Length: 185
Image 1 (cartoon, rainbow, N blue to C red):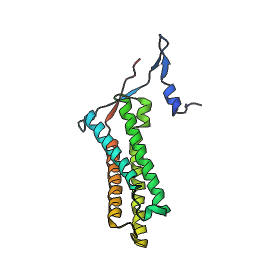
Image 2 (spheres, rainbow, N blue to C red):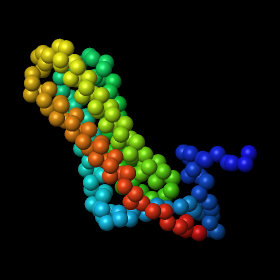
Image 3 (cartoon, rainbow, N blue to C red):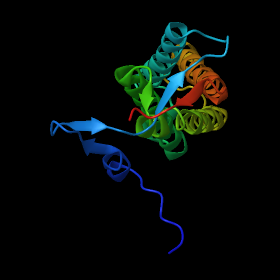
C-alpha cells in the first residue's frame, strides 16, 4: 500500500514514544500550545471552559432529579435526555483532560480533546433541543399533571442552560487558538 493508515487510540501514543540513551521512555511526538490570539489568556480560557462544561453537566444531572411529567416514562423525552447528559459529561471529560495535561498538549491528547469539543458540544445541544421539544409535546398532549408549573419551569430553565452552555463551548472551541510547536528531539 502506498498510503499508511492513520493510527488511532493507543497506537497513536505508542508511535511517538521511544527509549532514550538511559533506557527511559520519552515522548518524541509533536506538541500543541495554546496561543489565544488576543481572545482569552490561557488562564481565562481554562476557567471559561471548565465553568461552562461543569455548569452544563451539573444542570443536565439536576434535570434528571425533577419528576416533571415527561421524565417519568416517556421515551421521546428520556432518550434525548440521556444523550444530552452523556454529551455534557463527555465535554466535561475532554476539558478535564486538557487541564490535566496542561500547556503544551501532546499531539494525541490534542486530537482526542480539543478537536472533539466542537462535535461533542453540537451533539449535546442537539440532544438538549430534542429533549425540550419532546417535553413541550408531552405537556401539550397531557398537561403538567401533579408536577406543577414551578418544577416544569425550572426543568426548562436548566435545559436551556445546558443548551446555551453547549453552544457557547462549541463556538469557543471552533476559534483556532492552538498552534503546533516543534518536536523535542
